[in-house]
Image (cartoon, rainbow, N blue to C red; front, side):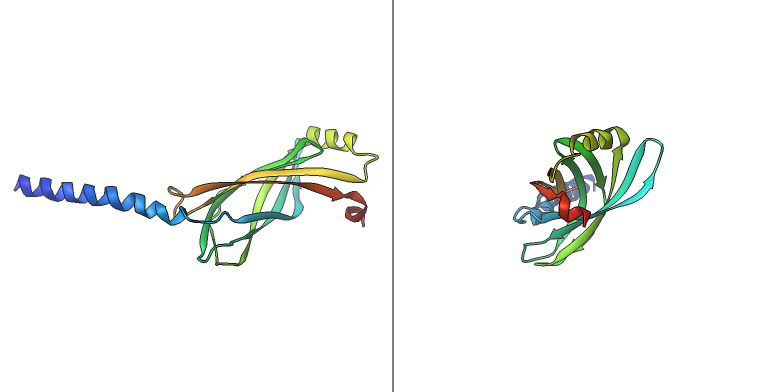
Length: 160
């Protein structure tokens, strides 16, 4: 009797050793999603920080749906780290479609004052956005894809 239990246990463990890696393979051939910042809204202001909500637009370039398991995000303006945040949201984005993700961000007044001292006479502000997005059917097997974007924000258009 114990021998049959050992054989069944061995077969179950062997099957799991083959199934678990295959379960994670669904993210191996995924083309990384494209991430873009769409807008930032002030949520609340505390004595030490400004808390914001950022809306990220994520495009799924794949032929099948992808499950977003979370996003980490940092925004630098003129080389100063102004905002950072993370979210452990879960969202499915259909193939060749866009999804919107809301991300909580926080910035200290010290960082904002440094930025304001650096840009009084500038017509453009340089930005860089770094982060990562986790894609996979489950958070345990999700694959992390980094994104890094740089550009210029024209202040004349922003003030209009």
